[in-house]
Amino acid sequence: MMELENLRDQVTAVLCQISKDQLIEVCNLLKCQTEREGSFGDMSRRELMKVIEQKLDEVEKSYKPEDAVQYVKELLSALSGMGAKGDSGEWRDFSRASEAWDKCKELRGEIRALEEKLKMADAAPAQAQSPAPAKISEVTIRREFRISGQIGEGGQRDRLSHTNLLHQIENGLRKGHSESEVVEAVIRAISPGLKLRDMLEIKTDLTLTQLKTILKGHYREDDTSDLYQKLISISQDPKESPQDFLFRAIELKDRLLYISKGKEEEHYGADLVKKKFLRGTSCQPTDHPSSSQRKPQTSSSSTEVQALVSELKAEVAEVKQMVLASLNNNKPQSTRRPTDSVGPRRKRGCKTCQLNGEGDNCTHCFKCGQSGHISRGCRAPRLLQGNDRGPLPRDQQ
Image 1 (spheres, helix red, strand yellow):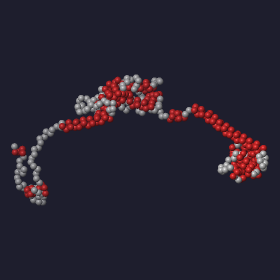
Image 2 (cartoon, one colour):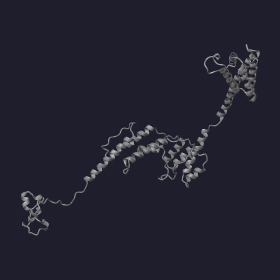
Image 3 (cartoon, rainbow, N blue to C red):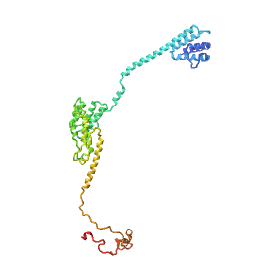
Image 4 (cartoon, rainbow, N blue to C red):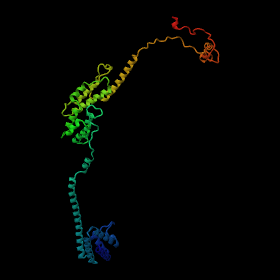
């Protein structure tokens, strides 16, 4: 660096000694660039020297130290041999050397660009072959599949039903769990001590299809033929509400459609099952209180369950009204002899006020007609003896 600084000082000293025209020629040969508009002829000597110094600063930054030293040496040699009237041979040699340095600089830039492209090409296959981290993290953070509840004997209300168990199995498969994980979760959900769990834990290579068949036998579930017969012959129990009857029919229909999807079961079409369901829920027994008033429903495919529920609710209200009316009509008649009318209501007031029409405003004693007391505490004898209102009707017979 010291050598380069000394050479720069020598170049500056030589530039101070040459003329303005020679400075302009040096700027053109060095291919100097300036932000000022116009040619180098419009610039002063100081400005021309500043432009040359900026060019040398660029050479010092872009070239290697030894190359920059060689460049400044050749420039100093050319400037020293420059005559007062024109160019010397050494200056022409420097011009050719400067062009060679510029070409060398361009070639080095192209070499660097090619090296970077080669590095990127080598790194691309390595990235393609590397495993994706997203898949690894997805496998590690996935939760273990579990069955909510316990599997007990068939018919226990506090244990899982067959329908609920199948629903949880389907949810596990939709969430991406394998069949082996689902089978293991079902076995863990069986109550300890049951022969079913001991038998399944001993079995090897148990598939999900085999497990479903075993569970169907454990719950004593009906096949599609039995469910179809129940659906076409379904009827409302005497103590069963219309809503419970409808929900039982819907549950039977859905079970039949779900089990019919299995390959080992007899298949029943959805349209056929829906027609039988509508027929079973729309027909009423002949001894039903409102069977004569109820209109038969249509079995169109657009009939909705909500319409059935609304109609059944209206029918329940109608039956309640009929029952209440029949209870009111069948009440036992009273055996007590009705009391005959004994005459008109007794008038208020004393005799005098009654005759004057002021009985309601009378303040006298109703017996004696005196003021100051009431008839309950009156000690005067009654003026009229016997029955004041006459004999009772039964005494007149």
